[in-house]
Length: 93
Image 1 (cartoon, one colour):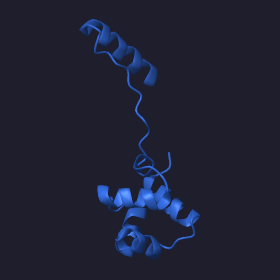
Image 2 (cartoon, rainbow, N blue to C red; image 1 turned 180 degrees about the horizontal axis):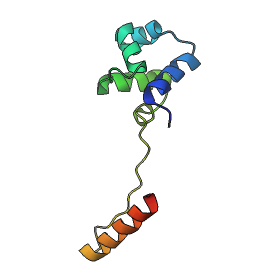
Image 3 (cartoon, one colour; image 1 turned 45 degrees about the vertical axis):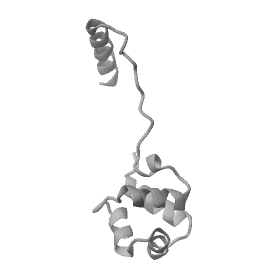
């Protein structure tokens, strides 16, 4: 999986922007953009939203979150839920 800091740098470079240009458009310092791209700091929610708008991507994309896959076991008894959990665990390992 691509590191999220690399994803941010790739988006910036693909649009031909410098770190300073991104910083100015998002309202942060160039040093912060650099810190985000080297994964030494993580952007706040507000900055993530501004970055997502700048690059035309979702916040989930920026933070490398895929839509979770969910199995609803709320209607199963404890034994059925445990069985599903065991099957999923076995399939994932």
